[in-house]
Length: 179
Image: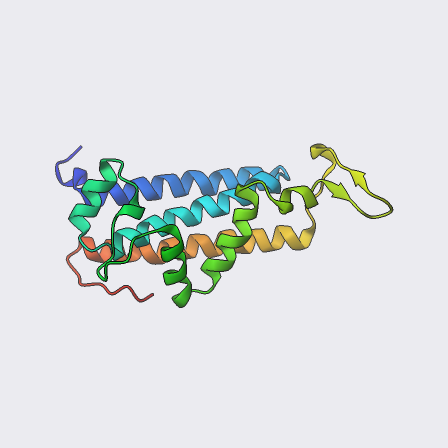
């Protein structure tokens, strides 16, 4: 490894892109096998990569952000340039002001990350009478599959947009937080 490759910005961005590639491949594998119940939770995990990348850009001091991140400090203890804690809620609200899809994707996918009514609804067939389904017999409705695939694409687009700012920053360009 070259010394330049080990720069904090490179390690941070590489870690995010490495995870995003694995998540996207996992999503594709799961959806091809029809396992949308598991795959949809990966949309939220991918969006979390974008939220982390945004937090780094918004941090009051990026060098301190890298040090804290590498030390395992939760980012919600860090602040943006205006003194706002970089909590998940703050980051989602801030990004949603520019990209409203962020909130919808976050909320929809969270229902699959955390056990919720979404999991319950997917386990019951109400066609004729209440019938509890086995995992193997459940078929995700086409509308839900299309929505999940669109939200996965949107989450990737959001991440790419944010990572493009990191690339410009690495090359010495001034960046704004507007998308």
